Length: 152
Image 1: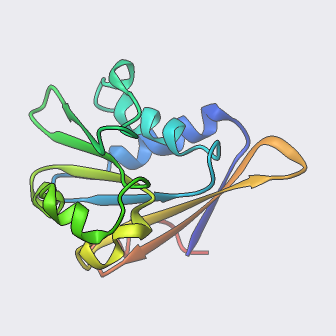
Image 2: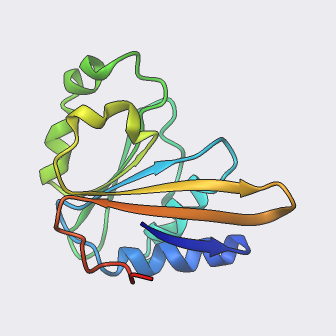
Image 3: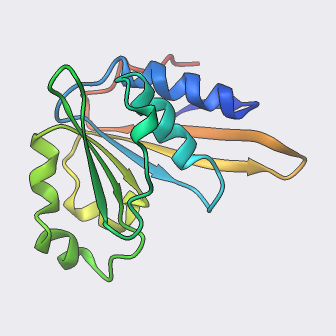
């Protein structure tokens, strides 16, 4: 597991933009954390690498927002919090998105059984003593991302 301490929204934006620069079609990033912990800010930073930071909107009511980067790459931003069960994810064809672009999935642990073997899971934790600080715990699953994050 890799950890990153974000001391500000700007730190989160920079971290996300850097990660976006390393990912490509079929990559999946799961974001977990309580409301207000930085998941949407992370997504904003991620999209900024592709020049899409002004396009971001929460997919809370639509389940998924689709973004098309100028380089032809599709980015899918899911919020699966409101799904009643995994079957609802399958019924919207959710797993078909995995092969067609980069997927950022908020609350992705809800659909863990639908995920492919390779993905990145980032857990956001607030710091009770510093309202601007976040601890990002990054776990990689499968072997695809073994060398993506520095080991300590």
